[in-house]
Image (cartoon, rainbow, N blue to C red; front, side):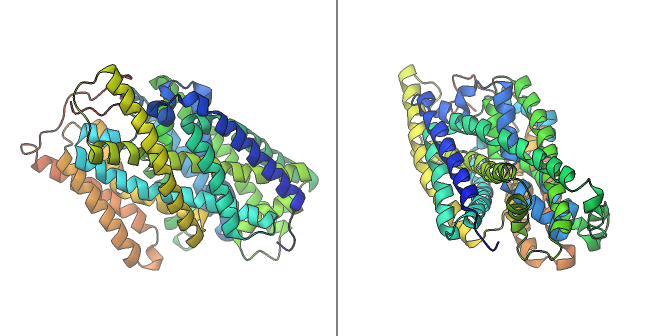
Length: 500
């Protein structure tokens, strides 16, 4: 971009101030409760849960990285992000939302603890931490990049500003803050992307004006069928998001927060549908750029900002920029809250402080719940610091999204699926599979030939499945699996029980 757009940037800052005020006001709803801070007291209705799931899926990667990916490498190089995330919400709605909501969990590693044991809980917590710090970093990088194109400020200062907004309102209101800001963030973004596409079609006389400029192979299914057009890499990205993202702290927080299993399921379907539609709009804008930007751009992340600021009316461009920033913030806040709560509950409170027993008095319950709130808020500081550092050194939103879920796709998905649907699953098998899948993913990252890029994502989960089945079958006597249905009542969910 040759010039900055100060008026548009001021509009974005006004939106950020609104998000900060709305989110910070939710501190009143937390009521000194860790349970309310992390999962909003498990009482949220369909509209709020569906909106939050949509907001988590529609991030800076599915908008900014999407349009840029389409422009730089073909339709499915960009559309893979919203497609994979929408498929993930569909998979969650069909197979995971109801049983996991019924278990009255606070964090996803709680499942690994109840179904398997504490070592499995700790390993899953660490892997999810790595995954979601990458996710938060990618979204902060996308938001900061937008601000550095609108104002004459460096990327690092824009990054610190974006991180500060997310940090303050999430630390204040927890999931209540995420819910309230998501409403203010996601629906204007949705309207902006749809309006942008429609305006461009009307202003330039229809799709035919753009179609002739799209290079051969960029708007067909060759991106899914031909290796030379990146099919293997695109399928790896789609599957990593569609299946690997099932093990997502931010999605699961929202599923746990739904007031009943049916609400959790319907909310997943709602989020999936609108994620696909808005992501498609961003991909179409990436295709339109071939006609409007015939000379190309050196940095693919600039495609959407250039279109919004140079080829659309001011109001439409403003709301698209606000939408991209809002989409990134809405995902970053969920990721920060997810990692902080995992460390507060599953690492520190259960495995370091170790204050738990089978039964608690009401006073002890209240004390543990308040302690969870304090620890989770404190953990937000190192979580955000790590995310900002990573975003500074690796500001690639699209690439970082797939990498984030490769980590949990490789090691955590199979134990979750078999833990839910296979009675012979045990802790020996789960822990072995996690370690083998993760180590294999790291090894393949450094050794896979360039022409097989993508296979390093697809191979580890398959090996993980084989390893877990074999180990479980051979260790049934040494480690009998838990056959009972592992549930806790909503009143028990905030304490640390050892009854399982």
